[in-house]
Image (cartoon, rainbow, N blue to C red; front, side):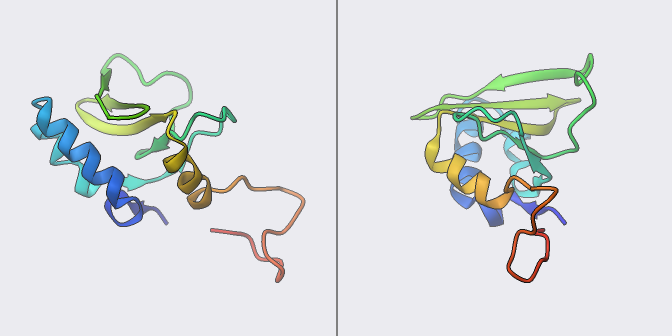
Length: 122
């Protein structure tokens, strides 16, 4: 089950909303409270904390894709949109957020249980 961005990472939700409003992105800012976290990027780069707010596509997003770079005080935040709907948040060079994203979406091991009771993390 996916979680709302504003419940899981409220400081990021607030930052996105403020940055979008300051860049004339009110229509996008209105989407932030409704964004559900689906997964994270699994590229393995130590600077990446990208979050998907829609299922990751198989291949490219397609012709109605656009990227909106924001101007945060640190690192990089880039929104990926399809038909003006936020489908992912690229979070780069933000260790503070990366550590929390990794806790939310840990790397799953196929061969080892993730808890002492043998249950898988959700």
